[in-house]
Length: 180
Image 1 (tube, rainbow, N blue to C red):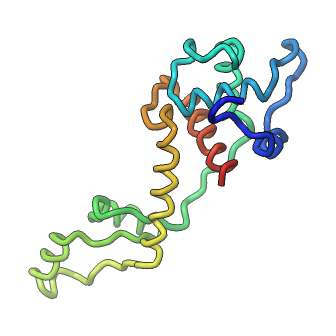
Image 2 (image 1 turned 180 degrees about the vertical axis):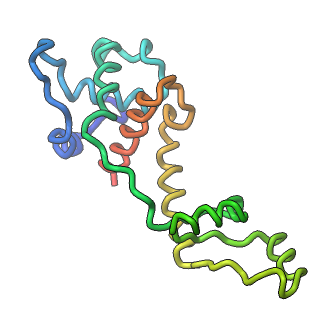
């Protein structure tokens, strides 16, 4: 077992979620070997053709990786319940859009916007609503994104096609799930 490969416990946890061969295209190569190859590539960001031979033919690993984002029917798009963002998104058009869609938000007011509103006096309007507790939870999302970016292939986005990159981000999320 190489550095970064799945442990036996992680493999047992993950095995039931993986696709099985449809037997029309012949037998599949060892699932664990190919999965370790995918995770090695996600962790190191190596080009597919430079994947070490211990993971099998690079083309086999790449083709199996391409299937990952297409595992299920997906979820229908739904309107988010709430949004938390930093001061960069605290402007009129963004707030208006969220209000129109009925999305609650936690956007802190910019200092210059607050000063301009106060300078106008009663014509400046009331201060926008701000839920400090919800804003503090934004940190959890940012930490998760930073953990995803610890995978070199996610941070640098070497993949040309969106669905391949989605598979790369999915693989990185699976590693986080398995190791927490």
